[in-house]
Image 1 (cartoon, one colour):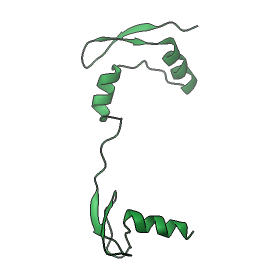
Image 2 (cartoon, helix red, strand yellow):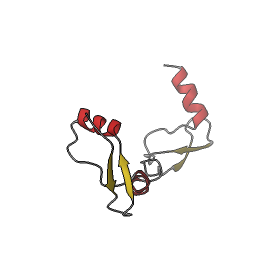
Image 3 (tube, rainbow, N blue to C red):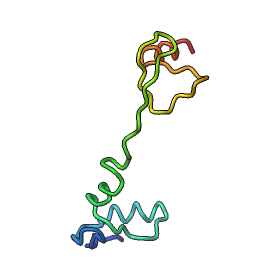
Image 4 (spheres, one colour):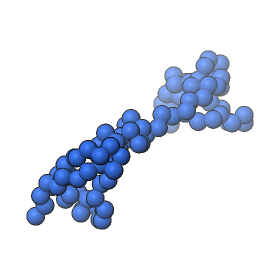
Length: 93
């Protein structure tokens, strides 16, 4: 039903293959538009793995007083735990 198509990337101008399998996947998901960028340009546009690196924040662990590095901005009235103390807290549940 589907056959491989050669498309041209709108960013770099290089040709890339829109495979029959990819076309089938697009059809199953209900996507109506063909991809406009080759895989390397899509990855470059969205970051290395499709995600931007997380901003990490440093805080003082509420349990041991050591350094805790967390992916959210700590709030003054909420406890923050280092990785080890957080794991111990989870064991209690």
